Image 1 (cartoon, rainbow, N blue to C red):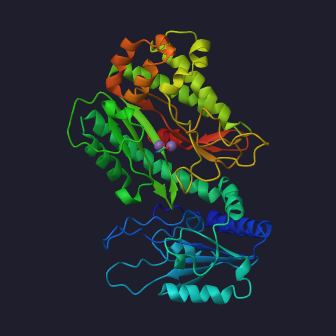
Image 2 (spheres, helix red, strand yellow):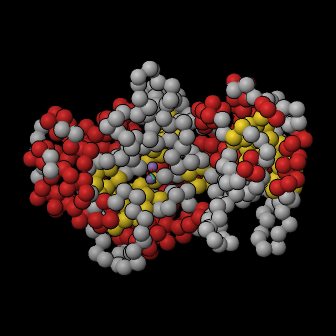
Length: 447
Ligand code: GLY
Ligand code: MN
Ligand code: MN
């Protein structure tokens, strides 16, 4: 059974049946008879015999938690039982893990082979006569990696598979929930460490220990930013020094069977900054409430800018009317990223930028070049809502040069700069009549 004890074999069998339906449909619609999903292999380090940590191809992971079997391949032929060719070399340098037990319940045909050559041969035999209509999905670090298949990642097929990946099955939702639950345990431990005066490094360790995860098992490198470090959006250093802890921004998650949680919380013991964090929570909860089926995410992003502008006025950073400040685009200097993104096997999951817009309509608005989700929400989508306010030196310097600088209370900005910034990020599952907040549900379960 999977490591988190998800005892939902029924969900998993249903998931595999749905995957077969989806792949059959995608093959048919793209005019193909078969496709091979490659697991990929670890990237080597230049002039070294070491490798970077292996990250399995998410298109393979969607069939089951094959996170430790580089070189494997899954053959899907229209209307047939998919065949998993597991790369199981004889290797006395490394541990070769067994096939995860869950896959034994998948109904897939599973064959273990000890070399890449054998896998290539077996695939060639299976697709003999139909190689021209077979596609390969995966990364090719060298030409051999596509097992001799010429059509590598054909865009029309990828688009169909990506479209399906935007709708999570109940099995996928169960994994995402489990990831949130464990991720939240990490956040609770991290907060405690912060309140005890821990350094960024110590807070990071507290998070990982509570999740029982190594760095490589985390879905993305944790952002643990004390004080003004929070103004670097993807701050990646972990300072060992203990300093006066004014504020913490921690953006860290966990993953279960490859499905990620992506959670951010801000904390401060300072009463005034603490109340600003509380105001951001309220703002963020309002945006979560508005994330409903049939809502255009671009409008939510727009609503976030309006709400953030109003908050900046309320806390005295901007002195202007809401209309004037919004018209001048002031919030873009304090909230320079997108409101969120799809979440799944990729932290920034696929299919989020709708490419089939009306003629002339752009994939994303010009003024929002960092917006990662521009679609109309549908049941089964899982996404993040992550508004923020930051005091970023380079953006503030740019703003000072603009006429709209006159609308900013720079003294107030100086007061807030040492705190860096705030981000509150939850993971939402869009349902037929609303949404489920996976993050807040998990926090509530530990309250
Ligand atoms: N952790 C990266 C993000 O929030 O998108
Ligand atoms: Mn995110
Ligand atoms: Mn995040």
